[in-house]
Figure 1 (cartoon, one colour):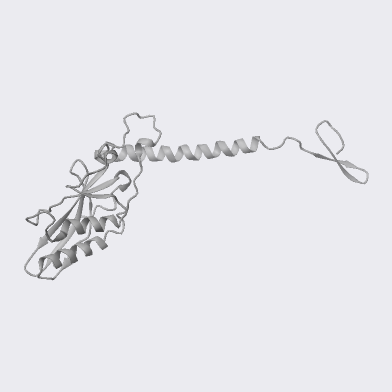
Figure 2: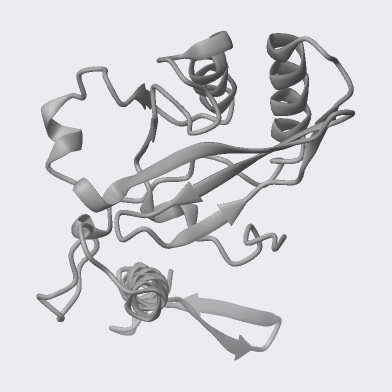
Length: 202
């Protein structure tokens, strides 16, 4: 199994939807697997909704700012293995957690232990959403709802560059706004005297 976390760009994702029923159980939120998954992902800072919950309108407008996170289970007679899988709005897997294992025979205990252990591997899965639509860009096609990784990186670099240029302009302005009444030292018999630009002895 591949770990995609190193390549993931979580800044593009505003919230998470968790299915209210996973494919390894037969009923909605069986053994509280969906509820547990929601609870754990909220610890990572994400707004999380079950698929049967009402999602706020502002979030619905950004359909591709959502991650669909499911639990995948590989069970045997002796061991239950679980891991988190996150997909974008196009169904592309962008993150896979490490595997959590449990030797419990009881289904609920086995699922809960393995899911919790898998979640502990998600140390790099943190909420860091950036609304790309607010970033100034000459490319009018750049929108938060549908942005390629390449365009995203270019946009972020341009934004960083713009901030640096702005800092330099502010610095130059401060230098130009410095007081213009400069004094000059003129040598005299016993030392120096200060004069201004008129010139007048100060």
